[in-house]
Image (cartoon, rainbow, N blue to C red; front, side):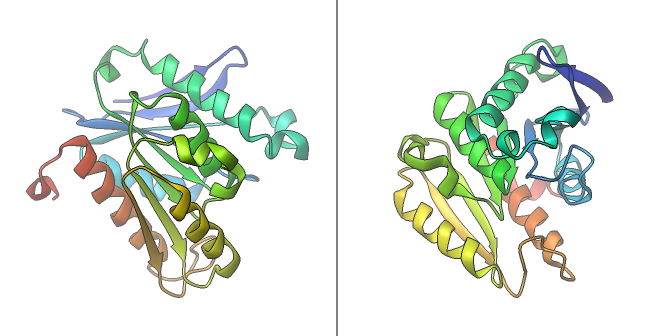
Length: 214
C-alpha cells in the first residue's frame, strides 16, 4: 500500500508505504537542505520495504520554514514534528500495532534522538546516518531505544562527534563506519552499505527472522 498523506496542523506532505504483512514501520527524518524526496533516503526506504518494513518519508518543515536557518537547525522543533508524525500514524489503521523505528540523517538524526527520548516506549529502534548527535545535547543520556550510528570513514569531523555521542548513550548502541565514505555517502557502494546496516538493525529489533530476507 502506498499513499500520500499530510501530517500535523501544517499538513506536511508525506509518502507512506506499507508492504503486505508489514512487520514494522520506519519514519524518516531528513537532514537540512533535504526533503521527503531525498534520493538517498528513498534508496534506504526501498531496501526496508523489500524486508517487509513500512516507511514514512515526510517533510519536517514547510517550504517557507526550510529557507530559514533558524528553523532548519531548531532541533526541538524538528523533534516535535517527528512526534506529530508518530501521533498521526495512530489514525492509519494498517499501521496500528506495528513496532516503530526512526531513521535520521544529519540534523534529522538529532531530532530523532530527541523524539525517541520523549517516547521511550514507542520507538523500538533508531538509525542515524551521518548524524549530528551532538545537537541532541544532554538528551543523549535519556535515549532508551537501541541506536545504530552510521558514519563515513572519511567524514572525520562527524565521526568524532559520533564517537563522543556513543560514549554518552546509555542504551543498546553500536557505531558502524563505512570505509572511505564522505558525509553524503556518494561513493560507490556506500549507500548500499548504509541501507543493509539499517535493514538488519530494524529487522532485528522488529523481531523479523534473519532468514526472512530475500
